[in-house]
Image 1 (cartoon, rainbow, N blue to C red):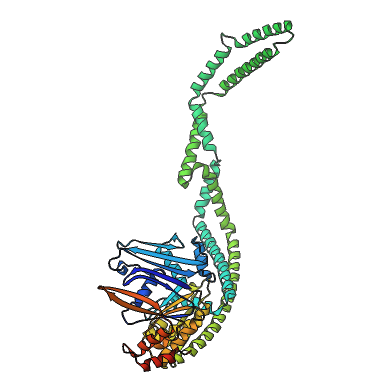
Image 2 (cartoon, rainbow, N blue to C red; image 1 turned 60 degrees about the vertical axis):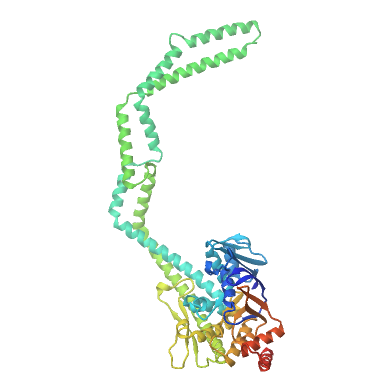
Length: 554
């Protein structure tokens, strides 16, 4: 529900603070007083396009702030806010500004948001209906959801959604399996050739690195042998290190005999050194023996590296991925041999899931037909008091082609009307005139209000072109609608205005050549005068006041 609206520098409004209550609120005033400015201001905070022409003359920017209650029962809104990480407590405060350069800012609970996000949030907070409204009820794309919401068969919708997901999933698996096996069959000969080719070379992960290292070693074998020989000569050449170590070890042993083993640690160190030197010489000698000018080995390595890289380029992979490629080709050949069994299994499962979906969709179809009949009856009951006793409202439900099936079933739902007995049924938005359309919309909204998550509905001149008893019936239904949701109505009809729980008068005044629009909430005696003015015009008579008193008696 809209609690408050704060407007600054919008067209003729300088500063305006309005508080709203539940039920039906009516806004009246003479033509040109600025009632549309209020709707434009509200439109800004629910996502309508912001234009600099709305900025009051002489001001550098406009600002509109709307305060809504927390909308805890509005589950679609709560889900959307959560998905977009927007915090909402007991209040939802939307503020929008626009300067003369066309730059604007939008905040919800002090969090900046985009115009796209605002538009989606606004649609879940407020519905605006006018003579030329082309959204909501007039959009056939919404009719199925509207009927489903009114019908209250969520369990069936969930069953159909689950059945569709399962059917669609296995259908996709079957289609992929068929495509895969078809592609594999088309290249079966190539696959067998590639497998034989890869099996001959038998690629091993990591061997490219090992072969490259060995190749590098072979290419530098002369230098390696030269270095090893030098190291061997340095240790065991003219300077016989081993002999020197043994001599030193013998001398320390002799000293130990005179010192009661005091130099045992030195003796042990020399002994270790002697062992390490001997081991090093053996290792150098063995290494020298291992390194040889093996030309044939290098040629073999070069040949294998070339073959591996050539196959890698051929299949568009790294050398280390060739073994995985071989496994993939083997699997694809295996699929050709055993894939038909898998496809047959998938086809059987798909058929089972399809039948399960059709059964669930059939139950939903029956529930929709039942709900549509009941809705049609209720709408038809509303039409005679609205002076549309000859009109017909029919909800058409048709089974769609399989290409249009989905998680919401296989039905198309359209609200159709005929305004005369011999006229064919047609789309709601194309058959009815402006005034008829407004009354159809009102009849629908009265019945759909309890199933709607939107907390505020705005009707702009829903009474256009009607008067007398028809206008009285429109007012009564707007009042009835106000018992379920908050309703704001811009009206020129005294019969409608008299039904309001709250009454706001829009006035325009000029001071020092500056024109300003103001809005005042009327007390009971002030309402009497305003309704009398609406009945009689600028010259209010006692008869008009008496008539106003009659209208105000509820």
